[in-house]
Amino acid sequence: MKIDLQISLDGEWASIATCERSAVSGGWLEYDHAYVVDQKDSPHNRAGLLYPVNFDIHSFNTLPAFVVDILPAGAGRRVWLKRLDKKDGESVELDWELLSVGAGNPPGNLRVRQSVIEPPEPPHVGFSMDDIVAKKSDFIEYAEEMGAVVTGATDIPGDAPKFAVVTDVNGKWHPDGALRPEMIVSSWIVKFPRGKQAADKLILRNEAQYYEVARWFGIRTGDKLAYRDNCLFVPRFDRERSGNKLLRHGLETLCSVANISEYGRRGDHLTFCHAIATVATAPAAEIMEYLKRDILNAAMRNVDNHGRNTAFLKRRGGPIELSPLYDFAPMSLDPEGIPRASLWHGMESAGRPDWVAVAKSLEGLVDVTHTIKFLSSQASKVARIPAVMKQLGVEGRVIEEVAARCEAIAGDLEKAGNI
Picture: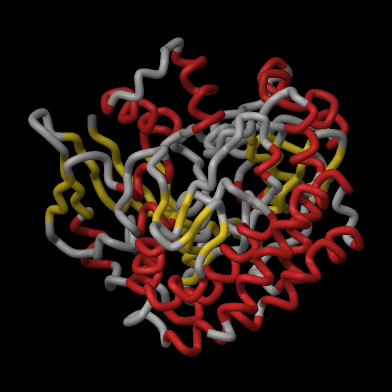
């Protein structure tokens, strides 16, 4: 019940800390003394934003929230449980075991040393994009059968099946973890439908267009997504090629910064805004970015807006800010009937926030009058969303799902400016 954490700084891995579970209760985190001496405390150097680099022993009652970010979850957890031939009892012991085997290459720039498997020599010849598209969610099993190393490709959290893949100089695709860093040209996540129903496929088909609506709306977004036959290829923003190095940028969810370890807990937007104010380089600007995202989530009915679907990007030498948007899709169409995962508690009804109440609740973090003006200024753009969706190729069934909600949210925002 002990793991050694490593961090990638400027393309090089360094040992950072030991995290151990107590036999009695909880556990502790301690930075390596050599790391404390070598590294001046900075948000970019920390294991988690709430844990300064120092000689203190940081105790916890359950898994630290930042460790939960790198714990295999959702479809990735199911893959690892199948490999281990275990059933998911969601026990603390099982979480620690999964960390020790399945956190060798998670998103961001942290990893567990015990999970790391070095790429083979010589490397596998790789696959074509057609191979991935043809095999779809069976691609990883196919890659294993063909002799490719796949450990690390399944460390991506989320309920939809997702695999991390990379390309080489010859345009061949490999499971992430199968190539040495200097051989990687680009890094991607390939995503498949959550289920087998037509609605699951409809959601995935329209996710790339949803991102483009967000880009038009002024949300911070990454490179364009590519869709092919029930496969969505998502360029990664936590990986960057720089000369002969592959830079890994820190990525930490809002749940981690809000010190929320458990899964499935209903999110509280006000709690998340306080977390943003605590760690962001420019708190007011990032809260406005967060509000704009929730306007879009409410209008376009992305109900899967939980605190692990928003994260901070910790680019070394850069600001601590919200990462580009991810997992933004018409999730109200999901056959399982997902409720809005994060709420303005006591300040919204049926998915429609009271924007004046929201602004007033943020007093002390941002200027209330300015925030109300900012919110009301978004009304005209929200009203135009259905037309923009049509221009950008969103399917009619999806537009029909959100058109009335866009009109309602636009009216709510305009009304807020008149109070």
